[in-house]
Length: 282
Image (cartoon, rainbow, N blue to C red; front, side):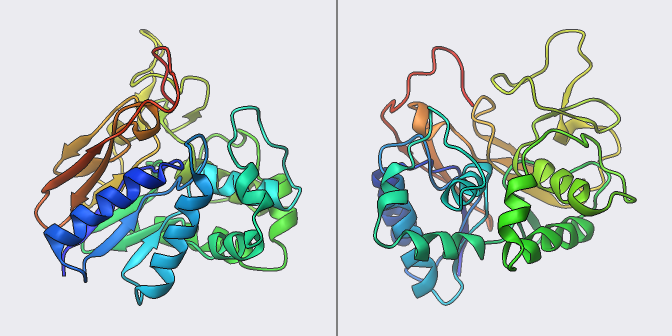
């Protein structure tokens, strides 16, 4: 059984189905398929994408799974009234769907991190202080709250940029918010691991800023595993021995990408430019 990881869909349901067909052709009908989050929002068919992923997951016996990305968490928060929609959101069809409650309930059960055959999968990044085991444990803390009766109050307090650096002594909502921000929002950091949320439309920080991609921070404790992530379309596809970046800008007119984790073979489909980015990719 081959294992494939797929980058951010962002509501590009047609391209997702085309890529899945190619995966089943190349890897067989029993291929394991792991999405790195942001199934929905900004693309043309978020409802279709979410319904398709839910159906695949529930019928696959565990072979198909999806991580929670920042857009997925945002949908849950909007659906329960914990957050307002922004003008760029394309969530109306989901929120008006007759099966919206079932779709939101399914999303709430999704993980924030997965560890598969030496690969650590997250949506955005991993704090440099965390090794793979701690990453999985901390993701589990947030997952437990999302799956509990306290999830609405959690979502209401989830938004915010502080604290911007991990400390094992963090407690309560500050601890949970820091975990969520690292796993679903992080891109650039200062050398001490403080997360920067201002510069999200480029592949590097401004000259002289001292900002580095989270994966290039010195002493990062996940260097002994291969981290697989999405979220950062300005980077495009990245393949290094210890790193696979999968957000190749599907919704911005790039490609939707799948990488076979067994042999690093690549499958991609071209995507129309659903959003004009004018040089900016988020």
